[in-house]
Image (cartoon, rainbow, N blue to C red):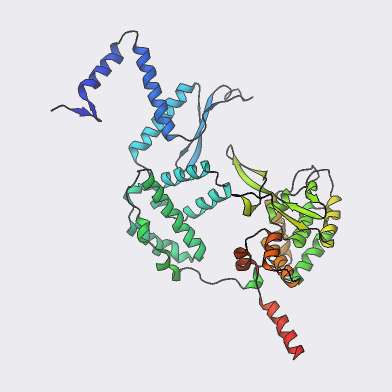
Amino acid sequence: MKSEYNGMPSGLLNDIVIYLGHGGPENAAVTNLVSEAKRNYVRTKHTQAISQMHTTNRYKDGRWRTMVYEDGKRREVLRKTEKEIYDWLYDFYKKQEDAGKTLEDVFFMLQEKKRLESRTDATLYEDRRHFSKLDSTIRSRKITDITDEDLRRWLVTSYLPTKPKPEGCKKVLQIIKATFSFGQERKICFDNPMQFIRYADYANMCDLNTKPNEEKFFSEEETAILREYALKHQKNPQAVGILLSIETGMRSGELAFIKKYDIENGFLHIHGQQVRRKRDGHQVFVDVEYTKNERMHPQNGRYLPITPGIEEVLRIAAKLPGESEYILHTEEGRAVNKDYYMEYLRRVCGEFRIKVTRNHGFRIAFNIKLINEGLDSLERCLILGHNMQTNERYYSYSDKRRLDDIRKKMISGS
């Protein structure tokens, strides 16, 4: 019976060892074949770019660079030659392969797959946020060692006692299930214990309380307070952002994106947004030529009629210090940072003890204003940039304040 080592006949293995140790001139050719085999192996595992650096940094200039995930974090790898970096990556992935993948390893592999599929940084961040809810002792275990009982125990004893909201709980369970499914797809594990765990079985343990509608958008009185405050600070581009959001219901990213040339023949052309991206380990803000609802199927945005209210805000914006193509800009001409704008809005709302603190509250209030002006659902969708189902479900509230007004009208009319 012939003996084998890792599937290779021992005689052949001995021949290779002898040849590599004592071979003739052709030894270099065999070494090249081994190096190429290592490269091919790395290419099946490694999805990050491998490139030679050209930089003013004397230490890094000319070195070969790539990134890997290690212990759940991105790590920079630098080597002097291309061969050295491939050798390092080969040893790195072989060690991982031999050690067995943890659930967290597989999750970050799934993240990388999604990144290659052009998922947004915001989506990847939300996935990480929901995955982090899972206990670290489970995340760091081998994926093949985790059972449905382990996950149930974590759910009942650790996660659900924190009273998560139903939508948050669903997303946490979904990302854990997706991670196991990806592990099955890559033949890293054979079972998905999440197939035995249903959200419906635990829904009654979530926080089922919801905010009253009047805490989801700005009332007319609150809008008036914010407008008055912003008018007093109209040299501040973020204050002007509040005014523009009141009059247009634009998303925060759209406010930061819109440019002067987007004013077209009595309309505002809303066709892009400012988004957060991760580059070389740092968060940066960039413009993209699509709105939130058109990311997958850009359709050149939407057109918003310029009303007298919008026209007045545009006149105020034109007087902002500095020169820029952006309507809302800093003295240096840079676009307003959407995160800074949202933080500014939260601070102002807190100053006046207004419970609603998100720019989203202006969108809902603007939609209600359009309802009161008699625009139908389709017309409102065209202006706000939603489909009809989203508009009716999330934006067409009839809160207690409106019902009180209706009651007064009905009583006075009887």
